[in-house]
Image: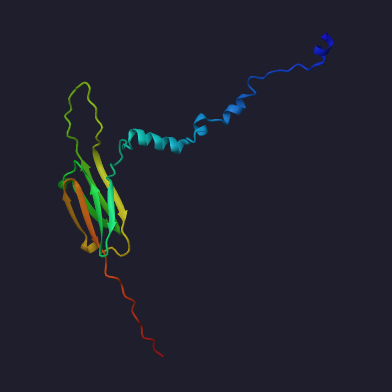
Length: 162
């Protein structure tokens, strides 16, 4: 029996040889959590808060009727005087500022979740939008912009001369 044990080749374990297997394995990938999905989950959990230097993006509803488009933007905490609505090269831009109401004091147990700063949103208007007749109204923190449609262009018949 002693001779049989001597004839078997000795198995050597290389602890560093298995490291290459770990390089391609990711526990997050096992659960379908790539970097983009993980970032999305973080935004869902903690909210998509703007970082320093970024603008707040107001939520909007865009509705199309037979003769106009209506854009309604929620802008709580923004005053009418702090808003501008501009159209340039068929791009409608809403800009404003939500100013902070808090006082600069040292307090304990304060939790700040509301965002302040620049507010901005832009939209490319459709080709049939009549930007010359655009109107805007602001009430109760909601900006309503009405963009009339241009009358439908009728084809023009051209006489052919011989």
